[in-house]
Amino acid sequence: MGARLEKTVIARENAEYSSLRFLEKGLTPETARILEAIFNLKPIIRASNVARITGKPLDYVKKKIYSLRARGLRVMGVVDYYRLGLIRYIAFTRYSSDDTYRYRDLMSFYVEVLSPITGAFYGIYMPLTFMSVYDYVVHELRPFYYFPAEITVYPKPDFDHYYNFASRKPVVDFTYLYSRFNTMVDEIILPSHSIAKHIDLLDLLILREIESNALTTFKDIALRIKALTGRDVRVSKISRHYSNHILKQNLVKGTTLHLPPSNGCSILVMLMTRGDSEVNYALANAFSETFLHRVSFVSASSRRSLHILSIPTDVLHGLVEFIRKINAWFDGIEVYVAGKQSIKYWGVPYHLFDREKRWWSLDKFT
Image (cartoon, rainbow, N blue to C red; front, side, top):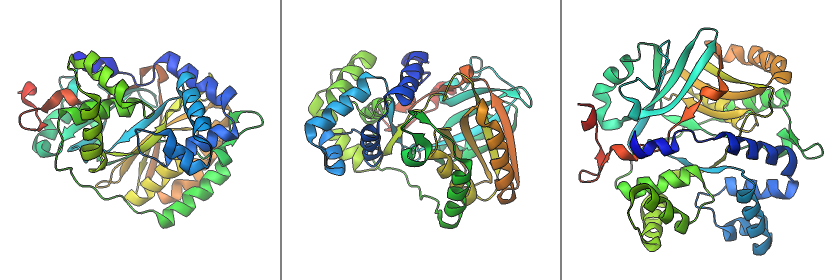
């Protein structure tokens, strides 16, 4: 994969540990308000905008944001892949080796499943203009099933209902979670999708850095691009592309908080739900408010969605009861237990972008 290997696993073990320590030891009500303000902004996050939302002095906000970065808490940008001309396919298969998959450069994520049967979930990027060949790409995995996921939902925790500031620990309130799901089912509207008119390689390189760190700066991005490609790109040029291409075309939707497993005694659960797209999307949004949520992939064109959750073992019974309560809303719910150490994510596949055609290319696979 070349340079793309550098960003193979978004959450390295030391970053997982630092983020977990921050959530369990360093999160205060004041910091939570800063994070909530950040969730309402698009990256790159500016301290002045956070100060305006919170009403706090600028120097105070700058120190808080510096503390977030220094202590390892991961605030990441949410990229709109559909607007980039990409759609993500989710496949479940007994074929469980990402190293030998011929279309590995198209992979979005990979998770090995231990139960109820051994296998793996694959996420695969597919350029929208190459949809006629997606069968070849997916069928090489010999999948049990697969579906397109046009919508991705990331965590935006509700600190007031799912965090105990006295004990400084995330909490799980399944009764409240069920009430939120019920409310959202009646109100949810699927987001609309369209493709951006103008993107180039520099846009993708900027997005790559924003997706990894929403608290980055233009100067940091310039240094990272030079380290990655050897190209010297002026900070002013990066700033112009960010404003004129990325923001104006809504290539980033917002920010998310990277959430590691809640403690050492947790399991990674893959919840596959089959039902109306609006109901699947409502469940994804309800989960996203909790500290259990890692990511959800929702299909707008089929009846399947996948929700990845990190579940402390002491709340497993509550999860079982929650699933029983929501079961009537769905045609089926399947629960898979995954290996936490096997999960891998890949970001924007910028290396497959043709600079001359200004569009995605699959030439390397032909």
